[in-house]
Structure formats: C-alpha cells, structure tokens
Length: 228
Ligand SMILES: NC(=O)c1ccc[n+]([C@@H]2O[C@H](COP(=O)([O-])OP(=O)(O)OC[C@H]3O[C@@H](n4cnc5c(N)ncnc54)[C@H](OP(=O)(O)O)[C@@H]3O)[C@@H](O)[C@H]2O)c1
Image 1 (cartoon, helix red, strand yellow):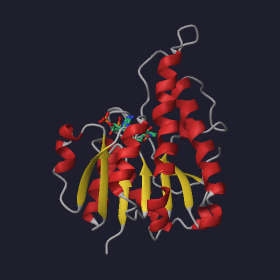
Image 2 (cartoon, protein in one colour):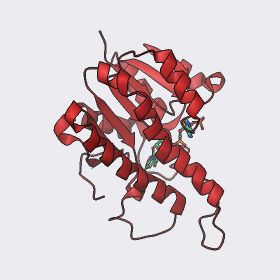
Image 3 (cartoon, protein in one colour):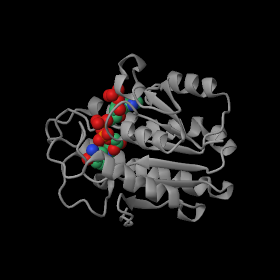
C-alpha cells in the first residue's frame, strides 16, 4: 500500500507542488482546497489524488473533513495553507481584525487540523506532522521589523508546534516546522529566487529523513537548522 499524505492549501503555490511531487512518486495524496470548484490545476495532476474541501479557519469544515476521513490512516500531514495578509502593518494604522484573520489561518488553523487528524495520524505508519512556517517567524533572526501580522503568526505557529512535539513525543510523532526559502509563488512574488519545484524537492528530502528524534526542530529548506 502506498503512503498517504494530506496537504492543506493544495490548489496553488507550494501546496500544489507538494501534491505534484508526492503523486509522481506514487503516494496517495489527500489534497485540500478552500474551493474544490476552482481546483482545475490540482485536478489535472496525474496519480492517486483526492480533492477535499477545507478552510483551515472554519471549525465546521475541519469537523466535516475528519468525519469524511473516518479514521483513515494518514502517514504525513503537511500544514501548508497560509496567508500574508493585505492590511497595513504600519504603527498607527494597525488593523486588529485583519491580524486576527492572519492568526486564524497561520496559527490556529494548523493546530486545529493537526488536532482533528490525530487519530488518522496515529493509524498511519510515519506519524509526521510538518508545518510550513517562515524565517520571518524566527524571533532570533528578526532584525528588520515590519510584517507584524505575518511574523507574529508564524512565531506563534512555531511555538505551538514545538509544544505539540513535546506533548506527542511519547507517541513517536515527529512534529517539525520548515522554512521553504523565498519562493516564486503568489505569496513570494515574481522576484523570489527559488522555484517551487526546487524548494519542495528539498523540503521533501528533509521530511523523508525526519525521525522521532527530530521532533520539535525548525529547519530551512536546505536542511540547515534555524534559530527560534
Ligand atoms: N512563497 C514564499 O516565499 C514563502 C516563504 C516563507 C513561507 N511561506 C509559506 O509557505 C506556505 C505556502 O505559501 P505559498 O507561497 O504557496 O502561498 P500562496 O501561493 O499564496 O498559496 C497559499 C495557499 O494557502 C491557501 N489558504 C490560504 N488561506 C487558507 C485557509 N484559510 N484555508 C485553507 N487554505 C488556505 C490558499 O488557498 P486559496 O487558493 O483558496 O486562496 C493557497 O492554496 C504558506 O504557509 C506561507 O506562509 C512561503
């Protein structure tokens, strides 16, 4: 039987590339998107790919996803869905509602999905949970300021995943966070130096090598460990 990966935010960008590469390698891919009716590129991917509906900020849709999976084994969860946010980050103009929305997608979403899928992950053989974070979530590397909503959401994601790593340590889980590099996607923009195919191929190598001994670690896409 092939290994099973569930990818959130799989309709475009890094998520779509994860689907392409795992499907090419023969994995069974559970690809979740907010709007399955607008998932043309995803549906064009050859292989064992199922398109499932999920908005990671919507508790009801998380419950429905879990119910539909009915305890089906999942070997690897990739919490990829994320937003940068469009509101102003300038002091004096902060939009607290917009900040909450970024936290809902980037921090609460991955925790909510991981918690909901724990039994599916326990039934799998690999017990790996990988969340796509950002170097901008590193407090130690923050020398530039700005991007308040995004930085704080990814720093909180890192803290949350480090905690889940410890809490699930006795069950042989590996919970890790990966920075994909600066990648040419809708979020990364046209000036980003990395192709998504390159970033995802490199992250997949790290994911493949992860063992329970790596739980709670923060890696760059090239395998370098990053400061919290
Ligand atoms: N690109 C970079 O340089 C870079 C650098 C560091 C970290 N990252 C991280 O890498 C991950 C992927 O980013 P990307 O560059 O591929 O961005 P992207 O091209 O903007 O794609 C973001 C994906 O997340 C999905 N998404 C957003 N909010 C969601 C929600 N509430 N529920 C479910 N799905 C949701 C989007 O779905 P829709 O199509 O429905 O909007 C889309 O599939 C993100 O976590 C991002 O923070 C990217």
